[in-house]
Length: 317
Ligand code: AKB
Image 1 (cartoon, rainbow, N blue to C red):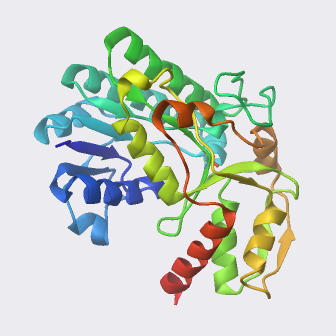
Image 2 (image 1 turned 90 degrees about the vertical axis):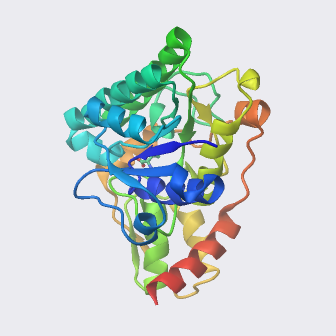
């Protein structure tokens, strides 16, 4: 049985990944690592062990790994793309100095490590349509710089020390449990909250701006499937393109309006978010993930929209 530590367990992905891992591997085998001020609450707190784990403190990571006999670390600590532009030094400290700490502990204690990359690891000079697995990665955002470095450093630890590092490039993740904060793709979550609350949605991203998105159950499944994959089949490691849907604001608006006819949307473009979105791919080619570890998403825009609206109506009533 695996013994897993999630660093950043109370964030958007971490809160749901922790619960999913507990369902699959047993509550007591999955430790929710959090920082002070972002303590686990409710089911996340009650259902299993938790520990303070600041990714910038290597000794702290090491002592939790030793105490709980951890063999697998999901390292989700990061600042998202928009907030990283206003705090570039902190983004580097958490994303890269933090990753270094995690990889060193993993090397010494024999842990496997999952540290996600993102569509943000690509930049304006990357081919935008069906972006290949192996291609130009010259992002100009600090988020992108940290994500490319994450991929390189993770591969370095695999090639040099044999640390079992694996990752995917997450698109914008849409979920109804913990809201994201400070990302370029956050609008695709916020739009559902506005629709269910009966509010007009003010969209910060221009009509026609395509970005890859994914529903949370598929994102969780991707991370866990990859960490379970047969290593002899992996040609790539850090990090795999994964895709399930790509849309612009008009397309998601109309998908929601089909179910909420009175829903209205207007545009008020945020220049920073727009600049970042314009530099990201329109759609990713995920053939390598499909071939090397059997990746296949379950949700498209319509099935995600039906589920999001149902879950949010229940949550907000
Ligand atoms: C962001 O928008 O910053 C993230 C991402 C796509 O990595 N959701």
